[in-house]
Image (cartoon, rainbow over all chains, first blue to last red; front, side, top):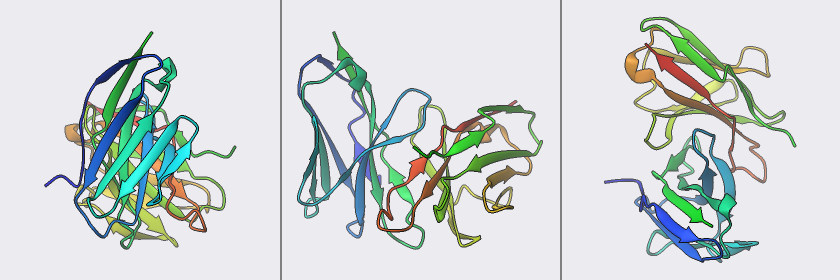
Length: 111
Length: 115
């Protein structure tokens, strides 16, 4: 069973659109949750941490549902520069705090 | 803004050769990691390092791999005898280990090509 599962996309949306990505994780003991962004052949860059109460950073809103083991990311007013792969990432807070990555959801924002 | 750096950006080697990938984590960070990403696949954990010793390693991190923090600033990944399937992007990451304990910051990666 996949540890962190995401729809690979691509999501192809016009500029200004609102787009939502979902992710599920298998380990109920997971402690911390993140969305990272990865551009082609570049390193993952932290977009935002995800908290149970939900959190917002500008046009980005993240939600966590621990009961359903479900994480979401909402992007409002999409920009061309939002085109990237969005990685759902979970930290199981075991002995090493290693990150477990989903395969990513690709977003293409068109003019 | 401090950042993780990695060298070289691209390494080409022959199968069976040894390679050393270098990383300089963010100063004062306490936890260090290596991950790899085979082209078209997801990022995978290799090894974590804390207090000058490995705290966890994945199944990928076999006897051909080793890590070192030789001088308190560099953090290296050595592959003793490279295989074709070692071709991938290798990312180093570091983590403060304080109030921001779970946030890892990634370097730009080294692309390893094994011929």
